Amino acid sequence: MPRHYGPYGGSFVPETLVPALSELEHAWKTARRDPAFQRELHRLSSTLGGRPTPLYFARNLTRRGRGAEIWLKREDLLHTGAHKFNNALGQGLLAQRMGKPRLIAETGAGQHGVATAMIGAALGLETEVYMGAIDMERQRPNVDRMRLLGARVLPVTTGTRTLKDAINAALRDWITNVRTTHYLLGSAVGPYPYPAIVADFQSVIGREIRAQSRRTFGRLPELVVACVGGGSNAIGTFRPLLGTGVELLGVEAGGPSGSRGAASLSAGRPGILHGSFSYVLQDSDGQVAETESVSAGLDYPGVGPEHAWLRDSRRVRYLAVHDRDALRAFHWVAEDEGILPALEPSHAIFAALREARRRPKRSRIVVTLSGRGDKDLAVVLRGSG
Image 1 (cartoon, one colour):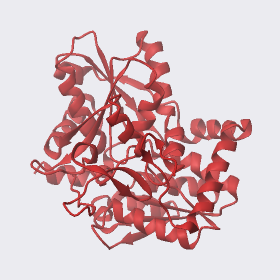
Image 2 (cartoon, rainbow, N blue to C red):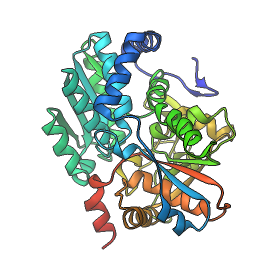
Image 3 (cartoon, rainbow, N blue to C red):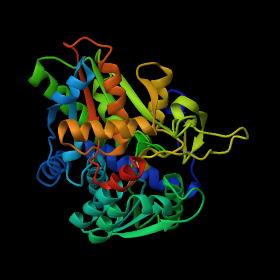
Image 4 (cartoon, one colour):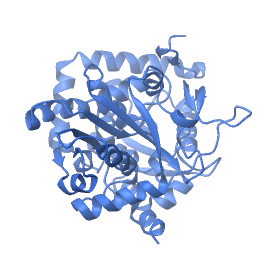
């Protein structure tokens, strides 16, 4: 079986899904070559999504770091408040192209669910979103948004009741309803071609960073940082920069101090999860381990297979940041810059500030601010109490 990313990737799925994955791959590859599809993708990215998102000089964060300049790639300003719009729009248009009237999705932090609900409404597609019961409680504002956008939110009460179990439920639904339904998978995980499709639609982030950096300060940054759960915003940030000399840093969720959190690249080992071979957090018996993170969007025991390959090849460096430090970074950005970041990119911001202090002031660091933090206010206030 082809793995696509060195030894990683593949499509470990029931036979029922093989034709659907082939259909999806064909639709995606033909759409990439179709000028009409690309025009519609660009039109809606601009007029509905609000692209391009700006590159922002975080002057006060830079002063706090006392080193390299900190720049934020403002994906939080994209419609629905996160980078998830990019992939949801692309896959929604593919669903239309394949004649699938129904979308299903999984969500952890709720941002992908909101983006899918919005795209479903805009394109006239029935939409249902699976979400772990624990995540529904800690991300209540996004549950309300999905419902207001016309989506049906389906609570998942099995297993850990978080993102992993939402994906399990969505896959079971897709197997049952594959002829009429497109599974709009939200991260760069799962069976091929999903990791490639998600990376393709999210690569607009890295392309804009590349162009905006050259236009703004005349060259590429020395370091680009992004948070990594399943890995969609990070692979979209990193992929257009892989052929350059830019240093790339992925930041996982370390969870509470003393735990493995959800840091599969830092603390896991290769295994199969949700149809793909990649790094997975496992117990001593090889069973998928429970995860723990203050950020629902990073609370996943696996990672996209392209990240696994980039880790092993050492093109990208990966590290983990604990909950308490992510919360500290949230407050730094809020109080220094007047921006409420999501808890997911707060992990990346903490790592970027630590890196800035080691580098000369003429260096530039770009951090992908993958989402806004209004969804996390209750969690932050509890964690700061």
